[in-house]
Image 1 (spheres, rainbow, N blue to C red):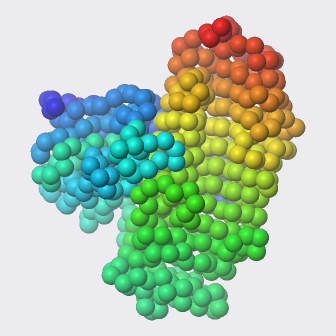
Image 2: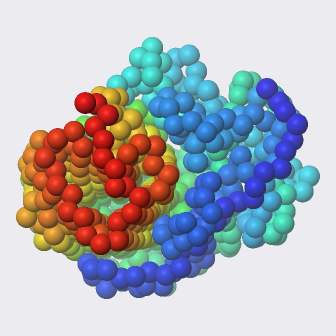
Length: 591
Protein backbone atom coordinates (compact mmCIF):
# COMPACT_ATOMS: atom_id res chain seq x y z
CA UNK A 1 0.00 0.00 0.00
CA UNK A 2 2.97 2.29 -0.24
CA UNK A 3 3.36 5.12 -2.67
CA UNK A 4 6.12 7.54 -3.52
CA UNK A 5 6.82 10.09 -0.80
CA UNK A 6 4.99 13.33 -1.48
CA UNK A 7 5.13 16.80 0.05
CA UNK A 8 1.84 18.29 1.09
CA UNK A 9 0.75 21.61 2.52
CA UNK A 10 2.28 22.65 5.81
CA UNK A 11 0.65 22.81 9.22
CA UNK A 12 -2.44 25.03 9.46
CA UNK A 13 -2.62 27.31 12.47
CA UNK A 14 -5.41 29.19 14.19
CA UNK A 15 -4.44 32.16 16.32
CA UNK A 16 -6.73 33.04 19.20
CA UNK A 17 -6.30 36.80 19.20
CA UNK A 18 -8.00 37.96 22.37
CA UNK A 19 -10.49 37.18 25.10
CA UNK A 20 -13.77 39.08 25.25
CA UNK A 21 -15.25 38.80 28.73
CA UNK A 22 -18.95 38.03 28.44
CA UNK A 23 -20.87 37.41 31.61
CA UNK A 24 -17.94 35.93 33.53
CA UNK A 25 -19.23 34.06 36.55
CA UNK A 26 -16.47 35.36 38.79
CA UNK A 27 -13.35 37.48 38.32
CA UNK A 28 -11.05 35.95 35.73
CA UNK A 29 -8.02 37.16 33.85
CA UNK A 30 -8.44 37.97 30.17
CA UNK A 31 -4.79 37.29 29.41
CA UNK A 32 -3.59 34.33 27.40
CA UNK A 33 -2.24 31.45 29.48
CA UNK A 34 1.54 31.15 29.69
CA UNK A 35 3.02 29.69 26.51
CA UNK A 36 -0.27 29.87 24.63
CA UNK A 37 0.04 29.11 20.94
CA UNK A 38 -2.33 28.60 18.03
CA UNK A 39 -4.28 25.40 17.59
CA UNK A 40 -4.75 23.65 14.27
CA UNK A 41 -8.01 23.35 12.44
CA UNK A 42 -7.34 20.79 9.76
CA UNK A 43 -7.98 21.75 6.14
CA UNK A 44 -8.91 25.39 6.83
CA UNK A 45 -7.01 28.62 6.28
CA UNK A 46 -6.40 30.33 9.63
CA UNK A 47 -8.46 33.42 8.87
CA UNK A 48 -11.60 31.27 8.86
CA UNK A 49 -11.34 30.48 12.57
CA UNK A 50 -9.04 33.18 13.98
CA UNK A 51 -9.68 34.10 17.59
CA UNK A 52 -11.79 31.04 18.38
CA UNK A 53 -11.05 27.92 20.34
CA UNK A 54 -8.77 27.12 23.26
CA UNK A 55 -5.38 28.82 23.57
CA UNK A 56 -3.06 25.84 24.00
CA UNK A 57 0.68 25.30 24.57
CA UNK A 58 1.19 23.11 21.50
CA UNK A 59 1.34 23.36 17.73
CA UNK A 60 -0.52 20.67 15.85
CA UNK A 61 0.78 18.97 12.71
CA UNK A 62 -1.62 16.89 10.64
CA UNK A 63 -0.06 13.65 9.36
CA UNK A 64 -1.58 14.03 5.89
CA UNK A 65 0.00 17.48 5.56
CA UNK A 66 3.51 16.11 6.03
CA UNK A 67 5.88 14.00 3.97
CA UNK A 68 4.93 10.32 3.84
CA UNK A 69 5.29 7.12 1.84
CA UNK A 70 2.18 5.70 3.51
CA UNK A 71 -1.37 5.49 2.26
CA UNK A 72 -3.61 8.53 2.61
CA UNK A 73 -7.07 7.65 3.93
CA UNK A 74 -10.13 9.86 3.54
CA UNK A 75 -11.74 12.23 3.37
CA UNK A 76 -14.78 10.30 4.60
CA UNK A 77 -17.55 11.09 7.08
CA UNK A 78 -19.09 7.62 7.23
CA UNK A 79 -19.56 6.31 10.76
CA UNK A 80 -17.35 3.31 11.62
CA UNK A 81 -14.53 4.35 9.30
CA UNK A 82 -11.05 5.40 10.40
CA UNK A 83 -11.12 8.50 8.21
CA UNK A 84 -14.39 9.77 9.70
CA UNK A 85 -12.91 9.87 13.21
CA UNK A 86 -9.68 11.56 12.12
CA UNK A 87 -9.11 15.26 12.61
CA UNK A 88 -9.94 16.81 9.25
CA UNK A 89 -11.39 13.41 8.17
CA UNK A 90 -7.99 12.43 6.75
CA UNK A 91 -5.02 10.51 8.09
CA UNK A 92 -2.11 8.30 6.96
CA UNK A 93 -1.95 4.52 7.19
CA UNK A 94 1.45 2.86 7.61
CA UNK A 95 1.74 -0.88 7.00
CA UNK A 96 5.33 -1.99 6.56
CA UNK A 97 8.51 -1.43 8.57
CA UNK A 98 10.28 1.64 7.27
CA UNK A 99 7.15 3.53 6.27
CA UNK A 100 6.99 6.98 7.82
CA UNK A 101 5.36 10.35 8.29
CA UNK A 102 7.62 13.38 8.57
CA UNK A 103 6.79 16.93 9.72
CA UNK A 104 8.89 20.07 10.12
CA UNK A 105 8.71 21.93 13.43
CA UNK A 106 7.46 25.51 13.31
CA UNK A 107 8.93 26.34 16.72
CA UNK A 108 11.11 24.70 19.37
CA UNK A 109 9.70 21.63 21.13
CA UNK A 110 10.78 19.07 23.71
CA UNK A 111 7.58 17.00 23.88
CA UNK A 112 5.16 15.37 21.47
CA UNK A 113 1.67 13.88 21.63
CA UNK A 114 0.72 11.51 18.81
CA UNK A 115 -2.89 10.70 17.88
CA UNK A 116 -3.06 7.29 16.23
CA UNK A 117 -5.06 4.10 15.73
CA UNK A 118 -3.94 0.47 15.97
CA UNK A 119 -6.00 -2.62 15.11
CA UNK A 120 -7.85 -4.39 17.90
CA UNK A 121 -7.13 -7.95 18.94
CA UNK A 122 -9.62 -10.73 18.23
CA UNK A 123 -10.70 -10.84 21.89
CA UNK A 124 -11.14 -7.05 22.16
CA UNK A 125 -8.34 -6.62 24.68
CA UNK A 126 -6.17 -4.70 22.25
CA UNK A 127 -2.70 -4.87 20.79
CA UNK A 128 0.47 -3.08 21.87
CA UNK A 129 3.05 -1.60 19.53
CA UNK A 130 5.27 1.41 19.08
CA UNK A 131 6.57 3.86 16.55
CA UNK A 132 10.09 5.25 16.44
CA UNK A 133 10.79 8.97 16.45
CA UNK A 134 13.74 10.49 14.58
CA UNK A 135 14.94 14.12 14.58
CA UNK A 136 17.02 15.10 11.54
CA UNK A 137 17.99 11.45 11.16
CA UNK A 138 18.79 10.74 14.84
CA UNK A 139 16.65 8.22 16.67
CA UNK A 140 15.40 9.87 19.87
CA UNK A 141 13.20 7.05 21.11
CA UNK A 142 9.81 5.48 20.51
CA UNK A 143 6.23 6.21 21.48
CA UNK A 144 4.31 3.35 23.05
CA UNK A 145 1.07 2.59 21.19
CA UNK A 146 -1.90 0.48 22.20
CA UNK A 147 -5.49 -0.26 21.21
CA UNK A 148 -6.50 -1.26 24.76
CA UNK A 149 -8.45 1.96 25.27
CA UNK A 150 -10.08 2.19 21.86
CA UNK A 151 -12.34 0.08 19.61
CA UNK A 152 -15.87 0.15 21.01
CA UNK A 153 -18.60 -2.04 19.50
CA UNK A 154 -22.34 -2.43 19.12
CA UNK A 155 -25.08 0.01 20.07
CA UNK A 156 -25.07 2.63 22.83
CA UNK A 157 -23.70 2.48 25.50
CA UNK A 158 -21.32 0.16 23.60
CA UNK A 159 -19.14 -2.77 24.60
CA UNK A 160 -15.61 -4.04 24.19
CA UNK A 161 -16.73 -7.21 22.35
CA UNK A 162 -15.79 -7.40 18.65
CA UNK A 163 -18.66 -9.85 18.03
CA UNK A 164 -21.13 -6.99 18.63
CA UNK A 165 -20.01 -5.36 15.38
CA UNK A 166 -20.05 -1.70 14.33
CA UNK A 167 -16.55 -0.83 15.53
CA UNK A 168 -15.74 2.80 16.28
CA UNK A 169 -13.83 5.00 18.76
CA UNK A 170 -10.62 3.95 17.03
CA UNK A 171 -8.10 6.57 18.12
CA UNK A 172 -5.91 7.06 21.16
CA UNK A 173 -3.00 9.33 22.08
CA UNK A 174 0.53 8.69 23.30
CA UNK A 175 2.99 11.27 24.55
CA UNK A 176 6.76 11.46 24.97
CA UNK A 177 9.21 13.89 26.55
CA UNK A 178 12.07 14.07 24.07
CA UNK A 179 14.92 14.74 26.49
CA UNK A 180 16.16 17.74 24.52
CA UNK A 181 14.83 20.87 22.86
CA UNK A 182 14.46 20.50 19.11
CA UNK A 183 14.80 23.84 17.31
CA UNK A 184 12.37 25.20 14.77
CA UNK A 185 13.06 23.65 11.38
CA UNK A 186 13.83 20.19 12.78
CA UNK A 187 12.53 17.38 10.56
CA UNK A 188 10.76 14.94 12.85
CA UNK A 189 9.98 11.53 11.38
CA UNK A 190 7.70 8.83 12.79
CA UNK A 191 8.93 5.49 11.47
CA UNK A 192 7.44 1.99 11.67
CA UNK A 193 9.78 -0.61 13.12
CA UNK A 194 8.95 -4.30 13.35
CA UNK A 195 6.66 -4.91 16.34
CA UNK A 196 4.15 -7.48 15.08
CA UNK A 197 1.30 -4.98 14.60
CA UNK A 198 0.01 -5.20 11.01
CA UNK A 199 -0.80 -1.50 10.56
CA UNK A 200 -1.14 1.83 12.30
CA UNK A 201 -2.88 5.05 11.30
CA UNK A 202 -1.33 8.40 12.24
CA UNK A 203 -3.73 11.32 12.52
CA UNK A 204 -1.70 14.20 13.97
CA UNK A 205 1.14 15.18 16.28
CA UNK A 206 1.13 18.01 18.82
CA UNK A 207 4.55 19.47 19.62
CA UNK A 208 5.21 21.73 22.59
CA UNK A 209 7.95 23.17 24.77
CA UNK A 210 7.43 21.85 28.30
CA UNK A 211 10.67 23.19 29.77
CA UNK A 212 12.23 22.31 33.12
CA UNK A 213 10.22 21.22 36.13
CA UNK A 214 9.16 24.10 38.40
CA UNK A 215 10.07 24.21 42.10
CA UNK A 216 7.43 23.33 44.71
CA UNK A 217 5.24 26.12 46.08
CA UNK A 218 6.53 27.89 49.15
CA UNK A 219 5.81 26.06 52.40
CA UNK A 220 4.37 23.05 50.54
CA UNK A 221 3.95 19.54 51.94
CA UNK A 222 5.30 16.83 49.63
CA UNK A 223 3.27 13.65 49.13
CA UNK A 224 6.59 11.77 49.03
CA UNK A 225 7.24 12.75 52.65
CA UNK A 226 3.98 10.99 53.52
CA UNK A 227 5.07 7.77 51.80
CA UNK A 228 3.88 8.23 48.21
CA UNK A 229 5.99 6.24 45.76
CA UNK A 230 6.91 8.30 42.64
CA UNK A 231 7.96 5.14 40.79
CA UNK A 232 4.40 3.78 40.76
CA UNK A 233 5.45 0.47 42.22
CA UNK A 234 3.34 0.92 45.38
CA UNK A 235 -0.25 2.18 45.48
CA UNK A 236 -0.15 5.69 46.94
CA UNK A 237 -3.71 6.71 47.79
CA UNK A 238 -3.23 6.47 51.59
CA UNK A 239 -0.13 8.63 51.40
CA UNK A 240 -2.02 11.20 49.34
CA UNK A 241 -4.90 11.12 51.82
CA UNK A 242 -2.53 11.85 54.68
CA UNK A 243 -0.82 14.69 52.82
CA UNK A 244 -4.14 16.24 51.79
CA UNK A 245 -5.46 16.02 55.35
CA UNK A 246 -2.30 17.66 56.71
CA UNK A 247 -2.51 20.37 54.07
CA UNK A 248 -6.09 21.16 54.99
CA UNK A 249 -5.28 21.17 58.70
CA UNK A 250 -2.30 23.52 58.34
CA UNK A 251 -3.44 25.59 55.35
CA UNK A 252 -0.37 24.53 53.34
CA UNK A 253 -0.37 23.43 49.68
CA UNK A 254 0.27 19.78 48.88
CA UNK A 255 3.06 19.20 46.35
CA UNK A 256 3.20 16.29 43.87
CA UNK A 257 6.88 15.99 42.83
CA UNK A 258 7.72 14.61 39.37
CA UNK A 259 6.80 10.94 39.16
CA UNK A 260 4.06 8.49 38.26
CA UNK A 261 1.93 7.68 41.29
CA UNK A 262 -0.37 4.69 41.29
CA UNK A 263 -3.80 5.68 42.58
CA UNK A 264 -6.62 3.15 42.28
CA UNK A 265 -9.55 4.98 43.87
CA UNK A 266 -10.89 8.48 44.41
CA UNK A 267 -8.94 11.03 46.41
CA UNK A 268 -11.32 13.30 48.34
CA UNK A 269 -10.38 16.96 48.61
CA UNK A 270 -11.94 19.79 50.61
CA UNK A 271 -10.35 23.14 51.46
CA UNK A 272 -7.17 21.78 49.94
CA UNK A 273 -4.59 22.74 47.31
CA UNK A 274 -3.00 19.97 45.25
CA UNK A 275 -0.22 21.15 42.92
CA UNK A 276 2.09 19.21 40.60
CA UNK A 277 5.22 19.91 38.60
CA UNK A 278 3.20 20.10 35.40
CA UNK A 279 0.95 17.64 33.59
CA UNK A 280 3.93 16.06 31.84
CA UNK A 281 5.81 15.28 35.04
CA UNK A 282 3.38 14.73 37.92
CA UNK A 283 1.04 11.89 36.98
CA UNK A 284 -1.70 10.12 38.96
CA UNK A 285 -2.38 6.87 37.16
CA UNK A 286 -4.44 3.78 37.90
CA UNK A 287 -7.66 1.83 37.63
CA UNK A 288 -10.28 4.02 39.31
CA UNK A 289 -8.10 7.10 39.76
CA UNK A 290 -9.94 10.38 40.33
CA UNK A 291 -9.92 13.52 42.46
CA UNK A 292 -13.37 14.22 43.92
CA UNK A 293 -15.09 16.79 46.02
CA UNK A 294 -17.53 15.69 48.66
CA UNK A 295 -21.05 14.86 47.56
CA UNK A 296 -23.68 17.57 47.27
CA UNK A 297 -25.57 19.16 48.85
CA UNK A 298 -22.74 19.80 51.31
CA UNK A 299 -19.90 19.33 48.87
CA UNK A 300 -16.37 20.64 49.10
CA UNK A 301 -15.18 24.23 48.88
CA UNK A 302 -12.00 26.19 48.22
CA UNK A 303 -10.24 23.42 46.32
CA UNK A 304 -7.31 24.11 43.99
CA UNK A 305 -6.14 21.39 41.59
CA UNK A 306 -3.23 22.51 39.46
CA UNK A 307 -0.60 21.21 37.05
CA UNK A 308 -0.75 17.43 37.09
CA UNK A 309 -2.14 14.58 34.99
CA UNK A 310 -4.88 12.08 35.80
CA UNK A 311 -4.66 9.01 33.57
CA UNK A 312 -7.10 6.17 34.10
CA UNK A 313 -7.58 2.64 32.82
CA UNK A 314 -11.14 2.83 31.44
CA UNK A 315 -11.56 0.49 28.48
CA UNK A 316 -15.35 0.30 28.23
CA UNK A 317 -18.24 2.64 28.94
CA UNK A 318 -20.22 1.73 32.06
CA UNK A 319 -22.60 4.56 32.83
CA UNK A 320 -23.17 3.64 36.49
CA UNK A 321 -19.46 3.57 37.29
CA UNK A 322 -18.03 6.64 39.08
CA UNK A 323 -14.91 6.98 36.97
CA UNK A 324 -14.45 10.70 36.32
CA UNK A 325 -11.02 12.26 36.44
CA UNK A 326 -12.46 15.08 38.56
CA UNK A 327 -15.86 14.74 40.20
CA UNK A 328 -18.21 15.51 43.05
CA UNK A 329 -19.07 19.05 44.14
CA UNK A 330 -16.42 21.76 44.49
CA UNK A 331 -17.66 25.27 45.25
CA UNK A 332 -15.39 28.34 45.05
CA UNK A 333 -12.69 26.18 43.49
CA UNK A 334 -10.16 26.38 40.65
CA UNK A 335 -8.98 23.57 38.39
CA UNK A 336 -6.18 24.43 35.98
CA UNK A 337 -3.30 22.91 34.08
CA UNK A 338 -4.62 19.33 34.25
CA UNK A 339 -4.26 16.57 31.66
CA UNK A 340 -7.09 14.02 31.95
CA UNK A 341 -7.04 10.85 29.83
CA UNK A 342 -8.57 7.36 29.77
CA UNK A 343 -11.22 8.07 32.39
CA UNK A 344 -14.94 7.64 31.75
CA UNK A 345 -15.61 11.37 31.98
CA UNK A 346 -12.99 14.07 32.22
CA UNK A 347 -14.81 16.30 34.73
CA UNK A 348 -18.32 15.57 36.03
CA UNK A 349 -19.70 17.90 38.68
CA UNK A 350 -22.88 17.04 40.60
CA UNK A 351 -24.45 20.12 42.15
CA UNK A 352 -25.72 22.08 43.79
CA UNK A 353 -22.41 23.93 43.86
CA UNK A 354 -21.18 27.35 42.84
CA UNK A 355 -18.16 29.31 41.72
CA UNK A 356 -15.94 26.72 40.04
CA UNK A 357 -13.38 27.79 37.42
CA UNK A 358 -11.97 25.21 34.99
CA UNK A 359 -9.14 26.64 32.92
CA UNK A 360 -6.31 25.39 30.68
CA UNK A 361 -7.27 21.72 30.91
CA UNK A 362 -6.74 18.99 28.30
CA UNK A 363 -9.29 16.17 28.21
CA UNK A 364 -8.41 13.31 25.88
CA UNK A 365 -9.70 9.85 24.98
CA UNK A 366 -12.79 9.58 27.16
CA UNK A 367 -15.46 6.88 27.22
CA UNK A 368 -18.15 9.55 27.73
CA UNK A 369 -18.30 13.35 28.25
CA UNK A 370 -15.35 15.68 28.39
CA UNK A 371 -16.97 17.93 31.02
CA UNK A 372 -20.50 18.04 32.40
CA UNK A 373 -22.13 20.46 34.84
CA UNK A 374 -24.97 18.35 36.27
CA UNK A 375 -27.78 19.76 38.45
CA UNK A 376 -27.61 23.16 40.05
CA UNK A 377 -24.13 24.32 39.09
CA UNK A 378 -24.04 28.13 39.24
CA UNK A 379 -21.57 30.96 38.67
CA UNK A 380 -19.07 28.79 36.82
CA UNK A 381 -16.46 29.46 34.14
CA UNK A 382 -14.91 27.01 31.64
CA UNK A 383 -12.08 28.59 29.65
CA UNK A 384 -9.31 27.33 27.37
CA UNK A 385 -10.35 23.72 27.76
CA UNK A 386 -9.27 21.44 24.91
CA UNK A 387 -11.27 18.24 24.44
CA UNK A 388 -10.41 15.62 21.81
CA UNK A 389 -11.88 12.16 21.28
CA UNK A 390 -14.61 12.35 23.90
CA UNK A 391 -17.10 9.48 23.84
CA UNK A 392 -20.12 11.77 24.35
CA UNK A 393 -20.71 15.53 24.53
CA UNK A 394 -17.41 17.35 24.66
CA UNK A 395 -18.66 20.11 26.99
CA UNK A 396 -22.13 19.96 28.51
CA UNK A 397 -24.34 21.70 31.05
CA UNK A 398 -27.24 19.45 32.07
CA UNK A 399 -29.88 21.09 34.23
CA UNK A 400 -31.25 17.74 35.27
CA UNK A 401 -34.34 18.60 37.37
CA UNK A 402 -32.37 21.41 39.07
CA UNK A 403 -31.37 24.43 36.94
CA UNK A 404 -27.81 25.44 36.26
CA UNK A 405 -27.37 29.22 36.16
CA UNK A 406 -24.85 31.88 35.18
CA UNK A 407 -22.42 29.66 33.30
CA UNK A 408 -19.77 30.91 30.88
CA UNK A 409 -18.00 28.66 28.38
CA UNK A 410 -15.28 30.76 26.72
CA UNK A 411 -12.46 29.95 24.29
CA UNK A 412 -12.80 26.16 24.30
CA UNK A 413 -12.18 23.53 21.61
CA UNK A 414 -13.91 20.20 21.07
CA UNK A 415 -12.36 18.07 18.34
CA UNK A 416 -13.63 14.74 17.00
CA UNK A 417 -16.16 13.61 19.63
CA UNK A 418 -17.19 10.05 18.74
CA UNK A 419 -20.78 10.50 19.94
CA UNK A 420 -23.23 13.36 20.46
CA UNK A 421 -22.32 17.05 20.41
CA UNK A 422 -19.38 19.34 20.69
CA UNK A 423 -20.96 21.78 23.16
CA UNK A 424 -24.45 21.05 24.52
CA UNK A 425 -26.65 23.06 26.88
CA UNK A 426 -29.62 21.17 28.32
CA UNK A 427 -31.87 23.74 29.98
CA UNK A 428 -30.77 26.30 32.53
CA UNK A 429 -30.62 30.06 33.02
CA UNK A 430 -28.23 32.75 31.81
CA UNK A 431 -25.68 30.69 29.89
CA UNK A 432 -22.99 32.07 27.57
CA UNK A 433 -21.01 30.00 25.05
CA UNK A 434 -18.50 32.21 23.27
CA UNK A 435 -15.41 32.15 21.03
CA UNK A 436 -15.29 28.38 20.93
CA UNK A 437 -14.54 25.87 18.21
CA UNK A 438 -16.09 22.48 17.42
CA UNK A 439 -14.86 20.25 14.60
CA UNK A 440 -15.50 16.80 13.15
CA UNK A 441 -18.54 15.45 14.98
CA UNK A 442 -19.32 11.82 14.21
CA UNK A 443 -22.77 10.47 15.14
CA UNK A 444 -26.02 11.24 17.00
CA UNK A 445 -25.32 14.91 17.54
CA UNK A 446 -24.03 18.13 16.04
CA UNK A 447 -21.62 20.90 16.82
CA UNK A 448 -23.57 23.34 19.04
CA UNK A 449 -26.78 22.18 20.72
CA UNK A 450 -29.62 23.54 22.83
CA UNK A 451 -31.82 20.71 24.07
CA UNK A 452 -35.04 20.58 26.07
CA UNK A 453 -34.49 16.90 26.83
CA UNK A 454 -33.16 14.42 29.39
CA UNK A 455 -35.56 15.84 32.05
CA UNK A 456 -33.84 19.21 31.93
CA UNK A 457 -35.40 22.28 33.49
CA UNK A 458 -36.68 25.00 31.11
CA UNK A 459 -34.38 27.52 29.49
CA UNK A 460 -34.67 30.87 31.23
CA UNK A 461 -33.09 34.31 31.25
CA UNK A 462 -30.65 34.97 28.42
CA UNK A 463 -28.89 32.12 26.61
CA UNK A 464 -26.21 33.35 24.21
CA UNK A 465 -24.04 31.59 21.66
CA UNK A 466 -21.66 34.27 20.37
CA UNK A 467 -18.56 34.19 18.21
CA UNK A 468 -18.37 30.41 17.81
CA UNK A 469 -17.29 28.26 14.86
CA UNK A 470 -18.19 24.75 13.79
CA UNK A 471 -16.21 22.90 11.12
CA UNK A 472 -17.43 19.69 9.46
CA UNK A 473 -20.12 19.37 12.14
CA UNK A 474 -23.48 17.63 12.00
CA UNK A 475 -24.14 14.00 11.06
CA UNK A 476 -26.53 11.57 9.45
CA UNK A 477 -28.46 10.28 12.44
CA UNK A 478 -28.77 6.48 12.25
CA UNK A 479 -32.01 6.44 14.24
CA UNK A 480 -33.83 9.24 12.44
CA UNK A 481 -32.48 8.59 8.97
CA UNK A 482 -31.88 12.28 8.29
CA UNK A 483 -29.22 14.84 9.08
CA UNK A 484 -28.56 16.59 12.38
CA UNK A 485 -27.54 20.24 12.11
CA UNK A 486 -24.18 21.75 12.88
CA UNK A 487 -26.20 24.01 15.20
CA UNK A 488 -29.48 22.53 16.39
CA UNK A 489 -32.31 23.11 18.85
CA UNK A 490 -34.42 20.16 20.04
CA UNK A 491 -37.69 20.60 21.95
CA UNK A 492 -38.35 17.04 23.09
CA UNK A 493 -39.50 17.03 26.74
CA UNK A 494 -40.94 20.53 26.77
CA UNK A 495 -41.12 23.67 24.61
CA UNK A 496 -38.12 25.92 24.24
CA UNK A 497 -39.75 29.21 25.17
CA UNK A 498 -39.62 31.92 27.78
CA UNK A 499 -35.88 32.54 27.40
CA UNK A 500 -34.07 35.14 25.29
CA UNK A 501 -31.93 32.91 23.05
CA UNK A 502 -29.39 34.63 20.80
CA UNK A 503 -27.15 33.04 18.16
CA UNK A 504 -24.68 35.78 17.22
CA UNK A 505 -21.56 36.18 15.05
CA UNK A 506 -21.36 32.47 14.27
CA UNK A 507 -19.57 30.57 11.49
CA UNK A 508 -20.90 27.18 10.39
CA UNK A 509 -18.30 25.85 7.97
CA UNK A 510 -18.60 22.77 5.74
CA UNK A 511 -21.58 21.35 7.64
CA UNK A 512 -22.16 17.70 6.81
CA UNK A 513 -25.92 18.14 6.28
CA UNK A 514 -28.02 21.17 7.31
CA UNK A 515 -26.27 24.04 9.04
CA UNK A 516 -29.15 25.08 11.35
CA UNK A 517 -31.92 22.77 12.55
CA UNK A 518 -34.98 23.18 14.77
CA UNK A 519 -36.69 19.91 15.66
CA UNK A 520 -39.29 18.55 18.06
CA UNK A 521 -43.04 18.25 18.53
CA UNK A 522 -43.01 21.11 21.09
CA UNK A 523 -42.74 24.79 20.02
CA UNK A 524 -39.47 26.67 19.83
CA UNK A 525 -39.63 30.44 20.26
CA UNK A 526 -37.71 33.44 21.59
CA UNK A 527 -34.75 32.71 19.30
CA UNK A 528 -32.84 35.28 17.27
CA UNK A 529 -30.09 34.61 14.73
CA UNK A 530 -27.86 37.58 13.88
CA UNK A 531 -24.59 37.52 11.96
CA UNK A 532 -24.55 33.81 11.12
CA UNK A 533 -22.32 32.81 8.20
CA UNK A 534 -23.05 29.45 6.61
CA UNK A 535 -20.07 28.48 4.46
CA UNK A 536 -20.91 25.21 2.80
CA UNK A 537 -23.53 22.68 3.84
CA UNK A 538 -24.27 19.23 2.47
CA UNK A 539 -28.00 19.98 2.34
CA UNK A 540 -29.87 23.08 3.58
CA UNK A 541 -29.02 26.27 5.39
CA UNK A 542 -32.03 25.84 7.71
CA UNK A 543 -34.08 22.70 8.37
CA UNK A 544 -37.49 23.19 10.02
CA UNK A 545 -38.95 20.22 11.91
CA UNK A 546 -40.73 21.89 14.82
CA UNK A 547 -43.49 24.46 15.37
CA UNK A 548 -42.51 27.95 16.49
CA UNK A 549 -40.70 30.98 15.16
CA UNK A 550 -37.31 32.71 15.06
CA UNK A 551 -35.87 35.94 13.71
CA UNK A 552 -33.06 35.75 11.16
CA UNK A 553 -30.95 38.87 10.55
CA UNK A 554 -27.68 39.07 8.59
CA UNK A 555 -27.70 35.32 8.00
CA UNK A 556 -25.76 34.59 4.83
CA UNK A 557 -25.15 31.29 3.12
CA UNK A 558 -23.18 29.94 0.20
CA UNK A 559 -22.17 26.51 -1.03
CA UNK A 560 -25.44 24.77 -0.17
CA UNK A 561 -26.11 21.26 -1.43
CA UNK A 562 -29.89 21.80 -1.62
CA UNK A 563 -32.43 24.60 -1.28
CA UNK A 564 -31.97 27.27 1.36
CA UNK A 565 -34.76 26.00 3.63
CA UNK A 566 -36.17 22.53 4.27
CA UNK A 567 -39.82 23.03 5.28
CA UNK A 568 -42.39 20.23 5.14
CA UNK A 569 -45.07 22.03 7.11
CA UNK A 570 -44.02 21.60 10.75
CA UNK A 571 -45.36 25.08 11.46
CA UNK A 572 -42.15 27.00 12.09
CA UNK A 573 -42.16 30.63 10.96
CA UNK A 574 -38.96 32.29 9.74
CA UNK A 575 -39.11 36.02 10.42
CA UNK A 576 -36.69 37.47 7.88
CA UNK A 577 -35.11 40.76 8.92
CA UNK A 578 -32.52 42.74 6.93
CA UNK A 579 -29.25 41.43 5.54
CA UNK A 580 -30.08 37.79 4.76
CA UNK A 581 -28.73 36.28 1.55
CA UNK A 582 -28.09 32.98 -0.19
CA UNK A 583 -30.88 30.87 1.31
CA UNK A 584 -34.11 32.25 -0.11
CA UNK A 585 -35.37 29.06 -1.75
CA UNK A 586 -37.59 26.53 0.06
CA UNK A 587 -38.27 22.87 -0.66
CA UNK A 588 -39.72 19.73 0.93
CA UNK A 589 -37.66 16.87 -0.47
CA UNK A 590 -39.65 14.23 1.44
CA UNK A 591 -43.03 15.39 0.16
